[in-house]
Length: 360
Image (cartoon, rainbow, N blue to C red; front, side, top):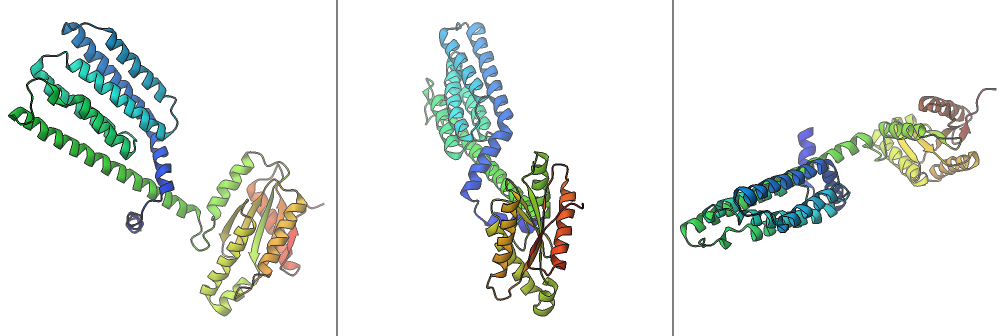
């Protein structure tokens, strides 16, 4: 079953809206890791700068202070960033500053060591960027900035066509290709895992036949709404299709499914601003809020009329039991009261609604 769903997901293109949702979700989940990368990169650069400045007798100048201030400011800004799109830009600024800073430090070590350290610095930056939640354009821009600032061919004595230069080119090409492959496959896998989790979650909370929310979804959302404080302006309506068993017995279950779908469509069209669901079988439920009693009764009466006047091939009617959700009620109590009112509507002749009233 899991493999079947996975194959179906992989065959489908991910909707653009889901791309944007994934990028934001990925950034929010990885933001602590992004902060860690920024802080470690900053700390390592400061350590190397101090080593080169004092052990290498280069001197600790105001230029180093400028880079320290710039990297610190960018790291602090990251703590306040909330949108993935902003991180794409901020990460490019950080890559630009730290690769220039690396160049500053590496230019202070002996000439024969510089090409190797430039390659090492570039590989560290590229690996770090490949695991960060950045978009494709931001990643490719970071690769270009990294190689522009850390290219070993600006070191005196290194040319493209000598042995050392050719070996550096081969290694740099391999490193870039490997990083690119890792980045693209990692992003692709994470995107489709996110897509699959959304699909599975949707299937868990949507009724497969009628494509409206199911009992699990309704109970979760209604309970949450009640926990937030319902006041005296909420109503719960239980709906049952009249004589549905006869429809199944006379025309077959396929026609019964058609009737269920059509009823669900009518409920969805009439109650789009409220919570509604298929509880199971031919039973549906609606949770209405911010309405007074007269409005609630008017809405369910209109739903009865809409289903009655639906000129489908197999017409049906519905009965509705409606109850006000009181402050002391639990969802189970409210459902029981609505079910009692529904029973009364069936007893009174069907194709109607009945408002539950507390016993005197």
